[in-house]
Length: 478
Image (tube, rainbow, N blue to C red; front, side):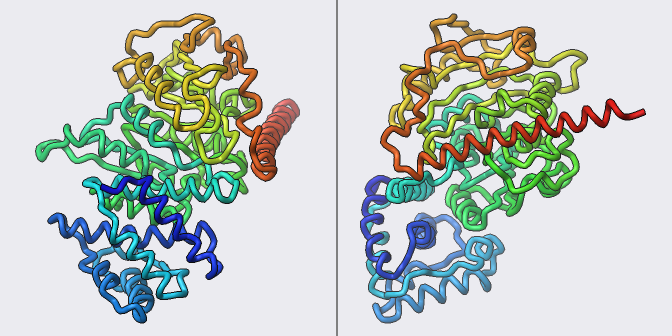
């Protein structure tokens, strides 16, 4: 059996073959996804599973060396324009190879075809892709982006949220489908022919990532017809198109967005020029009454003034924000990213008072936390959090406040209000965390983290200035 680690190592060694053709690391990763997907589609056929791709992979394998590149190019073009099934056309639309040498392609094809594949090919595809991204990050000394969420974290969140057959599951920043696939995997035993069909909905704004999303969902038996290519913060993300969800799981982008949202229903964050605040408001508005959500957010969501404070106040008034998990730094490919998971529910009807009574905060970041460095040590800390969270997906299980020396604390809504609704609550020593894992980082990685902090600070200043302008208008009005 070929593990994802073995496959990634083998394929990455072959990367040097494409360097002489002027192929960049990201181009190489994209090229490999075409080849791996075609191989795994062939395996679905041999396993008796329906596939519209026929014997495309075998045609490439059997082609003479002098013709293999021509046949491969013809295959990509044909699948992207003439495939009978819309899904296949979507996956291969505009797909082009960057390989120039037929012998280089032959070696890549032989490496993939010669691997002994595991029984769960879909998982291997996703694991191999993310492994290649991590290799790319290591080689280029840059983060590959904070949007590819570690599998350990995804699985823990899904396990806590307990998705049920028949629910509508949404990820408004779907990436390559990690959360949606984890939901499908979690429900495999509970989904039977007699149960109501689960609906998967998602949006991805990057064309290449959207292609990978469709590939990944296809290999896991999820019909990607509920996936949209576009911007969640445009009218596409409004209820009339994307719809409401019983469960929202997401790791949205954050940082500068290049402009405010273009949809008209984000009333609190309508003028925000970063991703994080509007995406949180989207998740709030897209959650159906009685629904629940787990959303990964950067630290500034917890303490920003202006519209950030207004958004938190609305979240705690109209929704039940019951749990915050402070995540360690260094678990995403981008170094120095400080993040949290917000767990909240939407009541069946808007309450007269605040829906949030208590906010439980679990600190998995402070000095000495299990799993502090990277994903390898994340499992012990997450296991402790899962146990502390309890069996109720809505956060209503009996919990224990561990006190000032523990990691799990409970803060009443009144205590939060006395902090001016600032949710950045710390009580454990964090002296070793201030380096953000950058002590051995390359200068460009350090610069990237500094840039992120500056973007967050600038957004807070802009929010404050906007509030001052609004106050001036109000005071000068009739």
